[in-house]
Each structure stands twice: as C-alpha cells, then as structure tokens.
Amino acid sequence: MHDFKGQTVIVTGGTRGIGKTIAESFLTSGAKVIATYLTNEAAAAKFKQDNSQFAENLNVQKLDVSKYEEVERFFKYIDSKYGGFEILVNNAGIRKDSVLAMMKESDWHDVMNVNLTGIFYMCKFAVMNMMRKRYGRIINISSVMERYAFEGQANYAASKAGLVALTKALSKEVATRGITVNCVSPGFIATELIQDLPDKLREAYLARIPMKRFGNAEEVAACVLFLASKEASYVTGSVLEVSGGL
Ligand code: NAD
Image 1 (spheres, rainbow, N blue to C red):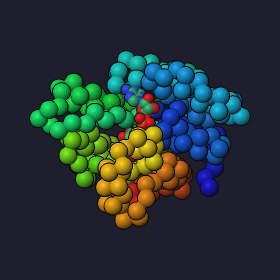
Image 2 (spheres, rainbow, N blue to C red):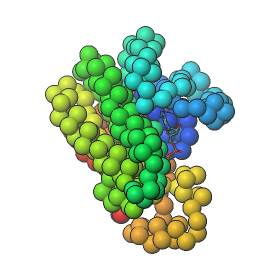
Image 3 (spheres, protein in one colour):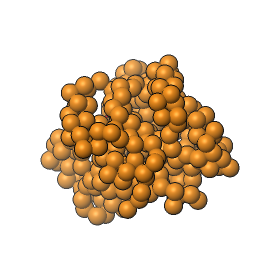
Image 4 (cartoon, rainbow, N blue to C red):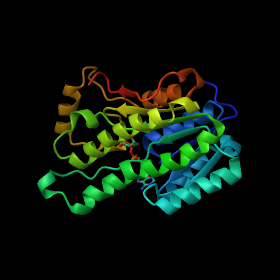
C-alpha cells in the first residue's frame, strides 16, 4: 500500500508479537528495518532466519529502552551506520498487573520505566536526529487502556495515558520541522498474550467489543504504516485507535 524504499525504520521490540508484524510490514514495503529485542536471543535469531529474504535490509539489535546510556549508544551506532533514519516505532511495552493495593513498588516502576521513560529516551535522541533532516515520523504504541483503565492495570493504564500526553506535547514542539508524532492505540489484539486467556475472561472481553472479535497484528501494522507514510503529513498529535469500536 505504501512505498518505503530509501527509508530507514526503527521498531523497538520488533522481533515478536505486534512489533514483529510491524517490522515485517515495513520490510515488505521496501524499508530498511532495525528491529530491536530485549533478551530473547533465540527468538531474535528465528526472526532473522524467517526474514532471510530481506537480509540486506534487516538489522536486529539488542536494546533495553529503559537504560539511558544504552539508548544513547544505540543512536550513535545508528547515526554512524546509516547516517540517520526517517521513522521510529516505539512498540516495546510491558504489563505487570495487580490491584493497586497489592502492587509491588518494583512493578509500578518497571512498567513506567519501559512504557513511558523508555519512550522519552527514544524520542529524545530520535528527535535530535530528525531535526537535522527536517523530516521524521514517530509512532508510539499506546493502548485503549489509557482511556478505559481496567482494574488491575493502574501502572499500565497510567503509563499509556502518559504516553499519549508525551505524544501530544512533543508533536507541538516539532510541528514546524517536518516531524509528526502520533499514537496507535490497540484494543485486544490476538497475540500469544490473548491466546492464553482463561475461556471465561476471553468471552467477557469479546462481549465488550462491538465487532465481537479480537484484532490482529496486521490491522495494527496497517495503521502504523499509514501514520509513517509521507501521505500522513498533516496528521500529528493524534491517537488512532484499532479496537473494533471499543
Ligand atoms: P509482546 O510482549 O509480545 O512484545 C513486547 C515487546 O517489547 C517484546 O519484543 C519485548 O522484548 C519488548 N520489550 C519489553 N521490555 C523492553 C525493554 N525494556 N526494552 C526494549 N524492548 C522491550 O507484546 P505485544 O502484545 O506485541 O505488545 C506490543 C505493544 O502493543 C506494547 O506496547 C503493548 O503495550 C501494546 N498493546 C498490545 C495489545 C495486545 O492486545 N497485544 C493491546 C494494546 C496495546
């Protein structure tokens, strides 16, 4: 649908789940892709193997977005190897659910550190680079939970709501520099995560969705590619929900 030939894309957490489908969609659309992973070497190797037909355009790098020095080193590497990039997809995210009164302090901080602070680090270095080129597309993967905030997800919902606020503020700061910053906000997407849900919870979630089905990663990726395209030049600071009408 979109042609990304000549463009370089970074997808965090890009070797599995939704991130993997986003990375593969960019590869099939002609982009060079740097897909990052956290610790799972085996999954990263399999991802590389599965996409061996794109070997020339695919670079898989280990990166913990919650570590400032690591993020700084990563962008120096990208700068020296590619001389910059056009698109950043902040997909990496975690959940550590429990009711607030029982929530461990570390579970609060871990979720904030990855889902919000990590994206601050990634955006900070990305924007410096994109400003030099006076072009860029940043897509942050939020969640409809930023609006719904289900019980047991205070940390996750707060981090995703914070991410929407970060997106809107940053979009204004760079609006005259050819850089757009948007969120894609998925509802329930059929990843491994949802496949493992107990039947009762699965049915309860399905009953809440007007379309009566879970979404798939391809449907999320299609929205990301639209916002990353040159055609989406007048869309910034927005939240595009992919939720079957939730
Ligand atoms: P997933 O667990 O399969 O993927 C998350 C990715 O993030 C993994 O590749 C993981 O390695 C990476 N990651 C985790 N911590 C990291 C860190 N510190 N540094 C770098 N990478 C790290 O989950 P998913 O379902 O594919 O979710 C992808 C994104 O979509 C997340 O931001 C999630 O919050 C969001 N989301 C998912 C759903 C859903 O239904 N699956 C719904 C709404 C939003």
